[in-house]
Amino acid sequence: MKSLISGRQGHAAALWALAYGLLGSAWALGMPGFPWGASDPDPDGALSVLAGTTPRFGWWIAAFSLLTALTAVALARGGGGRAPLFLAWPIAALLVLVVPDSRLMMGVAYTPLLLVAPLFGWSLGGASFADAWPWPVLNQLVCVLGGLLLAAAAVAYGRGRNRPSWFTPDRGRRAVYVAVVVPLVYCATRWAWALGIPLGVSPEFLAEGERGLWLAGAYLATFGALGGVLTLGLTQRWGEVFPRWIPGLRGRRVPSSLAVVPAGFVSIIVTVAGLTYVRWSVAGRFALAEWGAWLPECLWPIWGAALATATVSYHLRRKHDAQPRTRTNSVEHGHLDNSRDHNVTD
Image 1 (cartoon, rainbow, N blue to C red):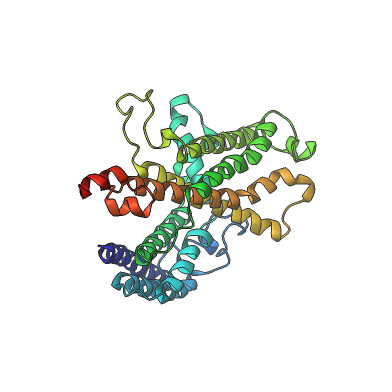
Image 2 (image 1 turned 90 degrees about the horizontal axis):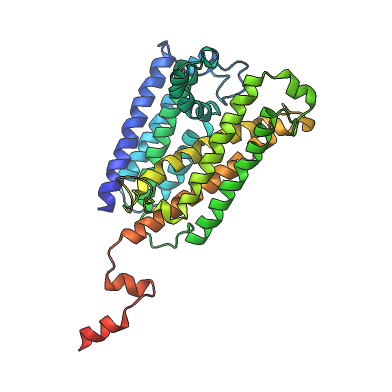
């Protein structure tokens, strides 16, 4: 069964890589749509690490995709060797954490606002879904999908090696606390700015921005704070069983994927956005006196790592709880029912 699952995920990752490699070749041959360089609406070329590339970079994309496809096929075939994993994880990390930039998080964060704006007659400065999700940002989603497919194949390939998991319930609980606290630093600055308090910035900096800009920042801060509250569900009872106040669902088990999928995706996009700010701060783009405008974002990789740890720990705990309680499992986990054993002996 393990090899079958690994095979499906490996083949899916290989198909993705071949398709993206063909796309890269087409860009190199002159097909429009190259998502970086001059065609990217990045105002000063500072967001993406690939901002300086040209369509000829498509040949490198094709070569990288071929390597990805070969790695995915090796994972699909199984065999137990560790060599495919040494390639799979760095490739997946590049696709998930390096190729995307902070616009991926901005698109996700502003999508709910764009959905409800027409109901209240908000113009949002004329912003639309096309502004939040231009092709270069959608392409980032495509790259993240490929990385996740390869990572899933690598996880399935390495499953069953009988190694103790690093993602324990205790680590998961500590990670939840970190994932709740870290975004509050960002929230405090943006809420303060919306109230006219120059926390972490000069009064001149605050005066330069329009009030609508600070209100948008407060919206993002509230979005992050609510996400922190939902993160608590990864260790609370209501994260496993729907509360009584939810009609039609009260008392039912919460599907693990309902928490794991969004939390896992959020851990990716906040880490990517935080790495963008870390890269900018290393490049000297920020003034130390205006720390409120960039330092909270530089903490986001910690937020993302903590959220990912909490999510994986939650998934493993729910998966273990769902397993049937056999006698062998009881012995392994120190819960042998002595009375039942005695009855069997009699």
